[in-house]
Length: 510
Image (tube, rainbow, N blue to C red; front, side):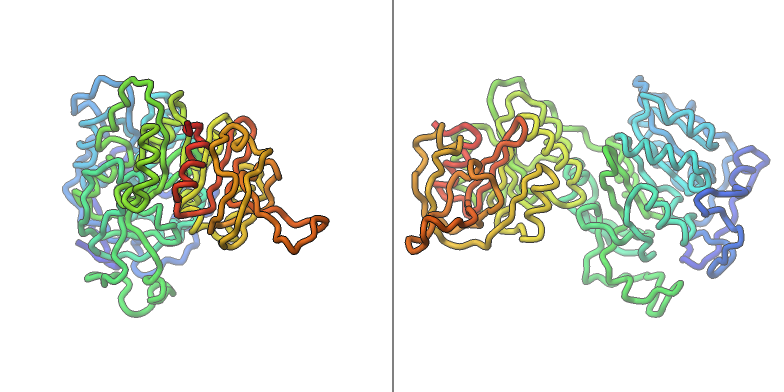
């Protein structure tokens, strides 16, 4: 294996058109990323970042005919503009694994790539080298493909051959703030909270590889991470500065494998440089080809609600055991689902409502899910926030979150114990006469809501004149948003009385 500053052996070449294309840099790149034109390079002339030693070259043109294809017309496109032969030599096992699950087509020229982008049978794109960054038309269409729902996986020899000055610009094309991180060998650990990981439990829990990391990304986007206290046994940056960057860079959060939403699609990155076998399953998982999806629910008229906690479902249900027991006595409760499964079930006519228990819904990784929840609630659904959400949300998050999503100018007042009275004008009180008329609660209070949306309001102190107008405060809110409803429970303990109110919001209180 070669370190960062090693110069790899050139792969043997043939007079094939692919070899000519791979060794001739594009004369002009509209993005300013043209290879070698007036740019000062660092270190050796050849900037192949840790590329593995070359293996015997197979000069055969790329083809999918050597393997019996599955009957489906769906296909994965291998986008290998720079050097398909080298990718095939190093990562041939990945090609075989993909072909065993879906048809594979290969594009080694810009024209071939563009001809496949609009195909309705395109299941995903595996970008195997950085050749595309020198072709503005491909970059523009690749960006649109992802943002309109496509799957893009960046891996193969990409991290070995991408120029240092180009990778940040590449990420920025997709609206990602990710930056080039350290280059090192470490043991990496699976992030079990990542949605792709939860959908693919067969992914390795940990493994060792040499990789180019990315940084400036949220933890929620990382599929694998290096433990904070672990010191790499083969750090390529050493103790001093490298390319003008010092030790402080290595202390930032970084990840060798990441995947996140970009628009309606997904962008995945794998920094592996040696073709580790564990990386193959990661590629498959990002292309939705690894573990089979859960079976569709059996036909039933059983109504259900979904609870989103983004944490261990078992731990959450233990902590709020009385709350979950009450819910399950009235309706089927689905908890711990993947984001994709939640989105799929939003269309079900048996869905009664959704209860959000965590501020993790605000994380970048969950932005697409949040947008679908907004659509669901405005379209006639019921979305309720409470439990740990109420204890964790900050004063700086409250107004932007509810204003941006639903146009609700809600602010918060620090939690305190107060006596509150039922609001007879609120529709929840009107249709549920069994709800208590008075409560004494320790809760987070909301201001800025319309008077009619407050389920309970603070009773003004007796020494305050009735002529003095005080801003209303409410520990529980149930507001109409277009055709649906938004609920908020300020008491994060979810006591018996709050549980009954949640049931009422979902029209389950009998």
